[in-house]
Amino acid sequence: MNNPHLRTGLGLRRGLLAELLTMPQGAVDFLECAPENWIGVGGSHGRSLAQLAERFAISCHGLSLSLGGIAPLDRTLLTSTRQFLDRFEVRHYSEHLSYCSDDGHLYDLLPIPFTDEAVRHVAARIRQAQEQLGRRIAVENISYYAAPYQAMSELAFIRAVLDEADCDLLLDINNVYVNACNHRYDPVDFLHGLPRERVTAMHVAGHYDEAPDLKVDTHGAPVKEPVWGLYAVACERFGVQPTVLERDFNYPPLAELLAETARIAMAQQASVRCAA
Image 1 (cartoon, helix red, strand yellow):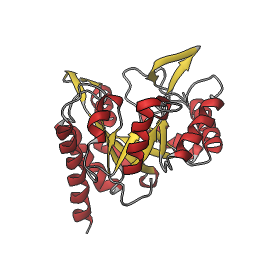
Image 2 (cartoon, helix red, strand yellow):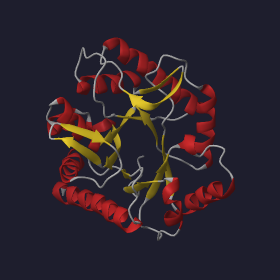
Image 3 (cartoon, one colour):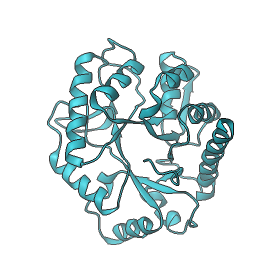
Image 4 (tube, rainbow, N blue to C red):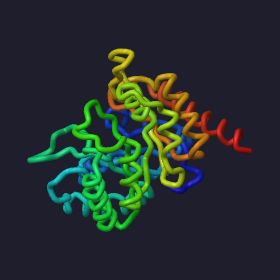
């Protein structure tokens, strides 16, 4: 995102629209939306988005490109997305390092095999997307519960894709924690294995504790304490990066969400003091 004034963000969800429209100026620095959910939307929702875009910077986090899929990239979607990004002066666009379609959309973000062939395949598609969008993009590390094939580690796969595609990383801290618990690796070691220069934004979110060794990424609950601790480590390693609080359902009062975005700001400020 490369804007020092954009530090704390909140996911723009239709279920929060009424409260977001009355949110005080400066409560957060920016709002993040999925462009697919807003492209071509008119009426009251379209007017609400336009009003929010006048007051807050907008970032975009895509859901439907299916960068890891085998069907050709949706050029119509890419064209519409570029127009949306230009219209709202969006400086940061990201997508998931996953696939979500086969013969139609699967409505889930599925993991890509961790292989050299998959690295080359998805990197070529990321480069194609960047060319059509006319801008550099970031890809997000996803949560996953079973990997189709692992010839290399998740960390090695992500690093290889970033290098091959020459793109950035949207670092989802909750996904790191969930995967570390589910797949038995050290989340701090994982963070330290990522290249500093590639991380341009972060996400935090809540998850569900199914069992001590099984966490489910839900975005439907407050951020848990271990994730806040890991976020502090990430701020120390990668510096202050624009960070979005994601909440997709079970919406609490806006004041509770803003208390969490304030905690993002506190962690960022603490990392700056430590670096001074």
